[in-house]
Image: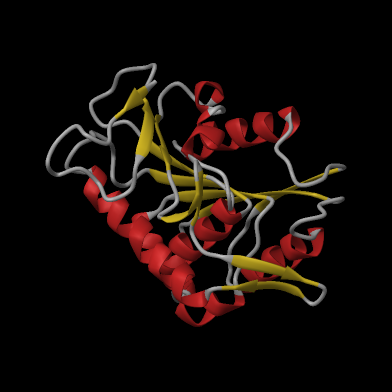
Length: 225
């Protein structure tokens, strides 16, 4: 594990951890891991060694501080009518992640045409928000137990710009935090936009189990080519 935050005075704005590629190439593909609300970069980084050897793996910390070792991309309230988000924070974090990708080019070597986002829960939400609005900068996203924000839809790129984007969606049918219906709704929306997400469902709650991890590793290996 390498903590690269203090590497240079050009350091990216977000704190992050790195797993270098296990197979050395001049310009490896990059995968950015993004955690859920209230968690931190260590959480998703626990999966880093299971990810394909050729990838440079970066686990980013959310820009919003909630408490000690507790971060997020935006604040959210869970109500009987559904999730209510802080829209300004969500939009600010979308821009922060795009800037973070640009900043990484100053301190890490990777193929900027092979940038993937893999996010759980709120990290999955941000993966949608970044990739669907700036698809030229992202090759693929893995959204695990996330949802597509209605607030982002007016910003979504045209179908012609989106057509090369690769998408993996996984969700537990018993999810008690972000309901399974969110995944179904997102997949329907993506298909209307001419996209062909690879969709996996599991008899699980709000979590990443071994089968989910195995499936996303297979998808990454195939999608990176």
